[in-house]
Image 1 (spheres, one colour):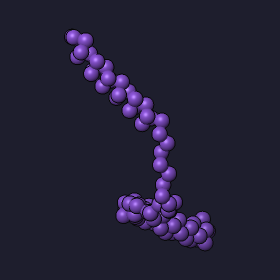
Image 2 (cartoon, one colour; image 1 turned 180 degrees about the horizontal axis):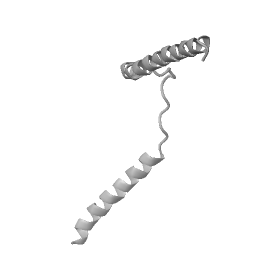
Image 3 (cartoon, rainbow, N blue to C red; image 1 turned 180 degrees about the vertical axis):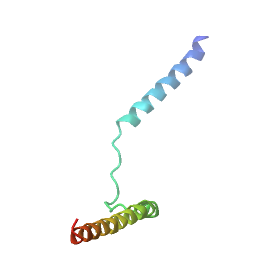
Length: 78
């Protein structure tokens, strides 16, 4: 390479390094306004919660039936 071709390459590399250094040192801009986060993915949450709630209600019905069966066994003398 000739010396007159090395200078532009070195200058380009120095400029790129300077720009990277300046970009890394700048502070992030604060948000304009604080605002609450809007709820997202409510359909997904509802789709997940529906079978869980159904299982809880089924569990309550099974527990109640088991309690009635125990009471009937105790009443029968067992």
